[in-house]
Structure formats: C-alpha cells, structure tokens
Image (cartoon, rainbow, N blue to C red; front, side, top):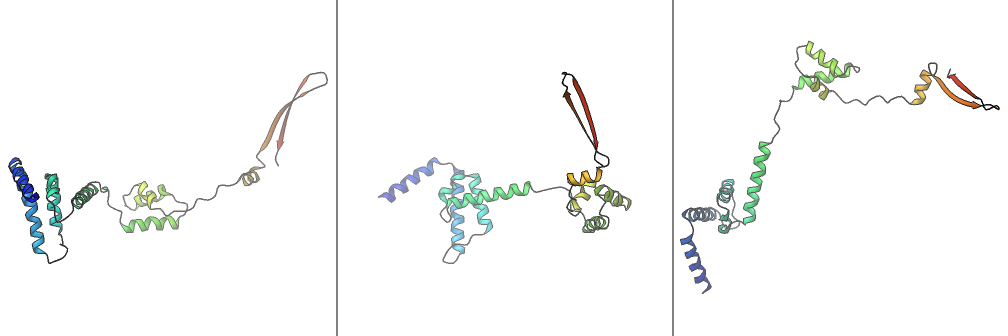
Length: 190
C-alpha cells in the first residue's frame, strides 16, 4: 500500500515539475545505470568523467542529490568543493619573473666568497660591467648568509678611545658665609 502511494505521489510530482528538471534527473539516473553496468560485481569504480558529470549536474541543478543512489550526496559536495579549491589555486598561482640562471646565481655566490667585504651594490656593479643585467635586490637575495660581526662592548669601546674621552662634572658648594661656589671638574681618562 505504501509503495502504491509513493508511486502515485511521484507520478503527480512529474506533472508539476518542469521538463528540464525531469531531463536532468533522467541524465543522472541513466549515468548511474551506465556506471553500474560497466563494472564487475563489487564496489563500482568511478572515473574522473563520472565525477565531473555529477558535479556539473549539481552545479546546474542542486536537487540532483535526491536522485543520487550510487554515491552519497556528501561525496558529490566534496567533489564540488575540491574542484572549486583547485580552480582558485590555479587562478591564484604565483606569477612573475622566471628564476635566474643557475650560472648567474653561482657567480654571485662565488664573487661574494672571494670578496667578503663586497656587498650587494658592489657585486651588482661588477655584474653590470660583465654585461649581466640583474637588479641589486636580486643580487642581495642570492648572497650567501653570513653572520654579522658582533658589535663591540662598552669596555672595548672605552679601551680603544680612553685617550680621547674626558669626563666633565659640575657641582655647587655652599660656604660658611652662605655664598655659592661653582665647581667644574674635567678629568681625562688617560
């Protein structure tokens, strides 16, 4: 009895729905039958074209998920999201200049190792003299990393410059008669 009522309900719904939705549902059901017929017994194997067709059908008509029997509707949604991510990953891939030749990168590193005091501006100038057109920023990108020399401590600074440094102080002394004496002291650190 329940089967007859559901068949009658679906027959009435066919009369109300548009022709396009009926044809799209028919395409989805027939394709599922085709996939089942071409497989051996067991779990059906899906090709990329099958997935693309079902994702395309979902994009045009989201109610196709009600007609999906072969795969879960959540699976079709996952395929759709995966395709969306792949599309935007491809659209947002990094564009720009191609990488520099390996010979030029090796030359920059070799010049830097041979002349440790040269920085990017000097190596850039030398490369321009050789006829190699690269920017200074590119040269600095391919310079090998060197740890910077540690900055001198205050003790070493004072030892190196003690004969040039003087300490100056000024203070006021009040005398017994309440007069002010101003004192200025200059000390040389030699």
